[in-house]
Image (tube, rainbow, N blue to C red):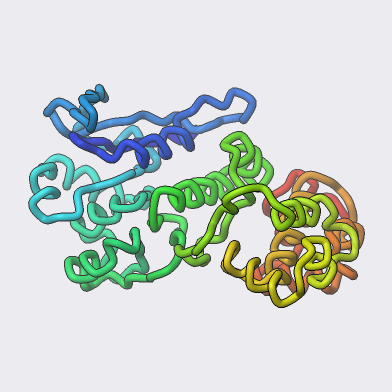
Length: 320
């Protein structure tokens, strides 16, 4: 069982703190050896928050009992950061990271990692609105813009609040496998897991109301195993191909064909991780012409083969 420390402090960002606790601290008795997470603080001050809210959390002196540290947020100004930092916290977190333990930051939490030089010569990211400030304050960090998150197995940074959930699901996937990660995502009522390299910016991430366009997308997801073309989707939405293409890109920040491949790959991953079906059959059920096409897209997007994915992330390891 992995123990996780979720760091809080006076006037902490509550949404990001909530994301961390929902991901890692919520009890999941049906998942064997699930995380044991505690919200902790190095501060002796009252944990006052917005709207008159006051929190209580154990005050710790070190991180010796934990396997991973999550920093949901942190002040973005030198004055705000120095007001919270103390020698005990600095020593504990640096020693924790130097020992090879994992440290995750959500949104502005990357500023604490930068302050402690944990991101020197490392790729890192944070919310786009803090990009200029972050680059100026931490010039030895290899800042990566316009990604959802970065995670190398030891240090993870998410671009913002929603991307923090994507990073958390990725950590869960690496710790417990694809099936469990997908199960957690479903319980959080999340869409299929987004890869870290996706853009932070989506002009219209959610359609404003149900319409023929939304119904067409829902229909496509339910019929991925059938022959679907962009032309047939446009016709189903009662749009011209050109109008459908434009509206789709505006809504999803990708071309309809790219989206269709992504959905079919997601279905293929579900089948690979939860069934013993042969690769050829998985390819057919997911809507690919054959296993060769499935392997091509798998390697192009995930840089591994379907069989390698199954071996690594599923219980169906003896599938043919």
